[in-house]
Image (cartoon, rainbow, N blue to C red; front, side, top):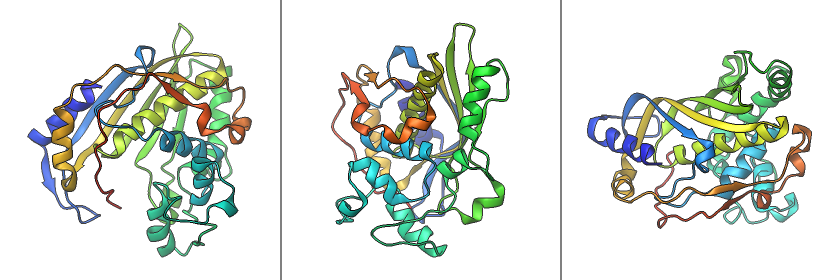
Length: 288
């Protein structure tokens, strides 16, 4: 993960300072790329603690196609809807979006249901009625060397109905001659300190899940960025992070997955990072 730290340092040295939508302000650059060989270990950040349960639960939630933040809480905490009685205790990374942008859009918002509109999972599983994930898996199986294996979240006709427009906009999948599956994801807007380690882990895990369903090996995860920024309230944390030496990458342990139809049966606890060692946590307030 040294390449990730190098990109953080480049932003601090060469970035432009700007005001932004959240009012916090950023320092950033435009255009960058990271590449990870998934056979060299799982790309979990080690210079601080990765919120692994959050990564797994959000990805399973996307793959279910849900638009309800409380469904994410059910997956994250392994609780029934009626057990999510303490909102402060059972918050997720999407709670504030539901309570702010979701509420402003007029969606149902209480302790049992928090709608977000047609965000990532909805677009993945029902883009104007099309199940992109099922089509993608089918096409990867029947026509593996096609150059059209795309998963897209930027549905222009529905952007204004989303509590948060997609940051990781689209991904392309590639089957190598050695029977490996690789993923290349483009992210238009990247919170390099809080969000990007989460995004790297999420798409690396997605590649592993798809490879499991397709009986393929994993190859590479390529991460391309548009606006790469660090929020100004996280500058000191970033300086501390880049001073730390990366540790050995962990190995992913997960169940064999046979079908996308079985996603709702999976539990966060079934996905583990074996041998995951990390430096102490570094925290900053998320800009919403």
